[in-house]
Each structure stands twice: as C-alpha cells, then as structure tokens.
Length: 174
Image 1 (cartoon, rainbow, N blue to C red):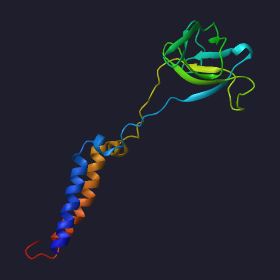
Image 2 (tube, one colour):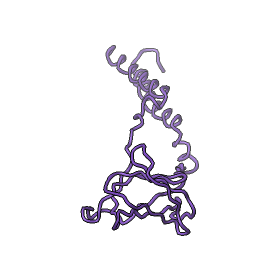
Image 3 (cartoon, rainbow, N blue to C red):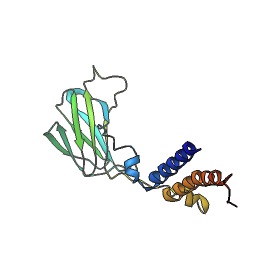
Image 4 (cartoon, one colour):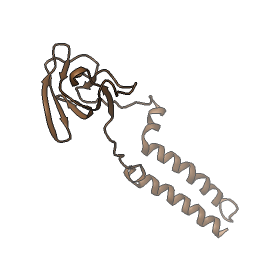
C-alpha cells in the first residue's frame, strides 16, 4: 500500500514538473542545416544563366546579382527587365549566387558531364521568408491549443483519479 502511494506521488510530481519546466528544456534543439545545393548545367563557353524572382514567383528587374566561390567574389551582374542574369567563363564547380535579399548555392556542370536532374539555369528567390502561424479554431478548440491549458488538463487527468483512489477505503473519509 505504501509503495503504491509513493508511485502515485511520484507520478503527480512528474506531471507538475513537466508543466512547470520551460518548453525549451523539453523540446529538441535547433538543427543545423546545410544550404540546399541545386545542380545547374552550364551553356557553351561556361555561361551560367539565372533568374531573380520574388517570393511570389514574379521576376525582379534591376537587382544586383553577385557570384561567389567560397569567400572570393568572382563577378557582379544585374538582372534585366525579366529578372534574367548571366555569368560567363565559368568551369564546373560550386558557386553561391546572391541577390539583395536572397541567395542560393549551385553546383555547375559542363554540358557533357551534367546529370539528367541538372536545371538549365539558376533560380534565386529574392525576399524574406514568410512564416505564418496557425490558429486551431475557436472556443474550446482554441483554448486547448494553449500549452498551459493543455498541460493543466493532462495534470488534472492524472491527479484526480490518483486522489480518488487514495481516498477510498480509508476510515473516516466520506
């Protein structure tokens, strides 16, 4: 009997501790991600074609575009009226292309060695990522989206049955 009571108290205190601890301690840490690399096929004379678009996919005109490899800046260009740009005299290798608010990492291949999945040009999305929250409903559904409310419901679901079982069978309890 004493053992069951200790187990019940440990369960209750673990539930309370889980509610009180900051979520950052309970959640997974930030995962380091490497930049996405896209295969691109070079044209004759080592020409790399590309286009600058905004987050909606519309072309952006007159945007400065820079070509880097590692920490070395190789060339600067500007997008035309349709957002297109070009760099020439390149060999196969890894290049970073950056616009005002966007960048991409590309592995350039010569026409003979390009894999079938290689794109015909580089697409650079210029703009900030938009991250939108999600509302999970109205009324009770909205309340249950709050982690504190949900934690309280879980804690109550654990503590109430334990308290009720502990109160049964003892003399002098109603």
